[in-house]
Length: 184
Image (cartoon, rainbow, N blue to C red; front, side, top):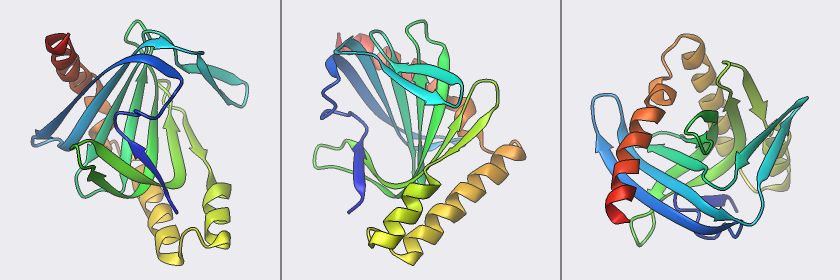
């Protein structure tokens, strides 16, 4: 069974107090749902390690913007620090994107991930998890190939300067921040 990740991350117990907004965009440059999770209180920071580099990706005042483009097999989470600076873009390869009974966007994770740092460095993650999922029968050959093809397509578009969803993160963030401010 694939892990379903929800845009509101309601089940994430690390966050004690949160604000959340979502919106559906239908523009020339992006069509799909965008969500914003603001972390007002948190049990403990979340750090990740990429070789020698350690990054804090979740702490008090941090925000996660998630973009769920329609009819694609990926979603992008842009992680912002408390000052609004981008820490990283985290691209989840997924089998599908949808909406739950409350209209909250979700995606079914296909294990492969791509991390893009503000420096432009790309980190490929979880090839072994994809292979294990195939060997254990969690996914079939078709889903395995879908994941690999989607990753390769994203990397090709990134190298050609055609993966513009990352460039839209700050604009999408500002739009959702206005919605959160209206709610509070």
